[in-house]
Image 1 (cartoon, rainbow, N blue to C red):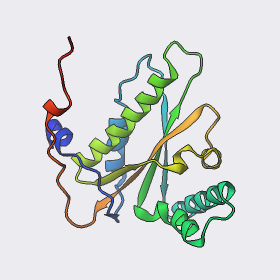
Image 2 (image 1 turned 90 degrees about the horizontal axis):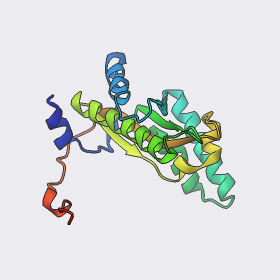
Image 3 (image 1 turned 180 degrees about the vertical axis):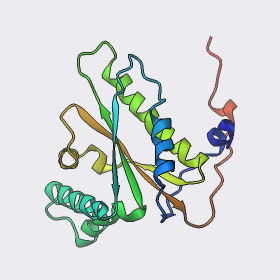
Length: 185
């Protein structure tokens, strides 16, 4: 797939199914991530893959985090939290590894990790895979971060859900650059 085609036509897909990306596809996903802009060559990112029974374990971590925050959570809310990781055969947790006190501000390090996540999404699209970047409450929950083994200096950038496209691939909406770009001064 041509690079501009991937950039112009990538779209998030929530309906994902088996099979998950294979080893060769994953290699390309992570190679693309490692090409993210990186001021200072800090490599301020790392990734965790979650698949198979580990998705159930992550669902239990989500349910536990929900109950810690809201002991009165409904059974429906708890079941929803448990089911979140089951929406795709593979999840990639994108983690920003922030270096405090470095000349490169933490905000730039976080943006770099976000660019790494975007690289994975583009590489998934280029390979005909489906992908969705999800954040939400669990991305910012310190209990979830600790359960995944993150240090205090690390942040979850998002959960990338990856798999084969279930159903038709939808087309991205047509946006006009003129609606978002203006000359300054």
